[in-house]
Length: 557
Image 1 (cartoon, rainbow, N blue to C red):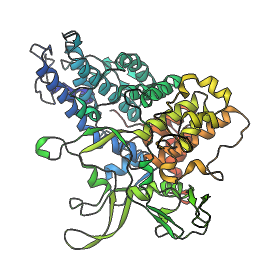
Image 2 (image 1 turned 180 degrees about the vertical axis):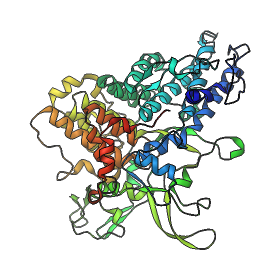
Image 3 (image 1 turned 90 degrees about the vertical axis):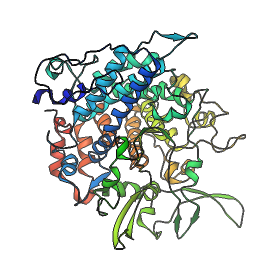
């Protein structure tokens, strides 16, 4: 049965037409004995809900693997052995977080749905089940992508397994992340304009197909296509999505030379995995017991911000366009080098300070303890995408498509007709073509003559008026375009850390891996992760372990 571990749980279908099976079958028997066709609305909706419930089972694990294998999160001395093994890349097949069978259970459910849904059934000229069909295809592609990110080469199959004999991983080819992406790009492309199921109120429960296609192309090295998918998603006429600066402004309420005052941080959440609020109803999230102080963990949180994140955040420069009360003229100001802060985390970028808080407080038992809380951790909504994720991956795609000035503009200014004409050379604009088409009515940046500003660079999310920073956040003249691309890619990688830390999408390890694979430089990832404890505590043993790419991945068996 060992060889069947990764598939056998997937045989226990939760689909409406499926049969409940045990996790261990001793005979090579047929496991499904019923009419498999999903041809009624009840069948397909119930089956879709079954897929959604399976997605819940991998939500926490995806976050834990993505965060703890990156450099922004450090485990505490109170962390379980299993969490420490994940963080140190020493997890075995016995580790509780190494459960590929749960990902394959999602895939099995999706394969069954895709094989049996009646996509030809029409009502008033519209295919009845096409929305559900597209949503399930997106869940399958996303799940396979997560498998490849954390397991390397994985057994790949797209037909439902109906017998134990079929549930033998050795029967199937092993695909790496690029092969998986190359398969699913044409598989999903026909559904790029398909609406999500269940009505508008459930839009954010499903993966945006156009964004997922951008991700697949990005991993596959098809950068121009990735850039186009992200661009078309953000600028779609039906729902243009500028990086609204109201999400920036409330991160601080005033600028004082004695320090900053900030309010809570939160970006625009595009899509999330809806979890249950009670165990009675199904799968609940236990991330709070790992990341924050709770009664259940007796306030001993197990994961926290790393020293590397603290150092990166503090190395940034806050910028403010300040109106002098005497002259009534605008001026660009920066905190003084000897600025004294009420909290050391206020230095530099404010996102870290706004998302993670800690200090002594009383528990429900009345005793004072050192506790930690996370602004963006929700027990019922585990994110797939924030809007800023799409902008940053678009910047990554633009940059590698040979458009580094445009990519930098996404970070510093935000893209609009004005910023394109001001900060992107004519030569690059000619190469970019439609990728730099932005509606002057939907995307309005600082200094435009009409409309309310709704577009700024992502760096402004934590560093104030970054568009006015002429001292620190600038793009230098470099000897070659390749040098410029590498320089901007490093900035993007840092911005993904500043913006994505403790957003709980679980994507940091994936970001590092994608860049390292692209550069064919194992040391890029190894150096980042081994430096999570700060410049003065570099983990040489971990660095040497991660120089071998095989050690990036969890063992399948």
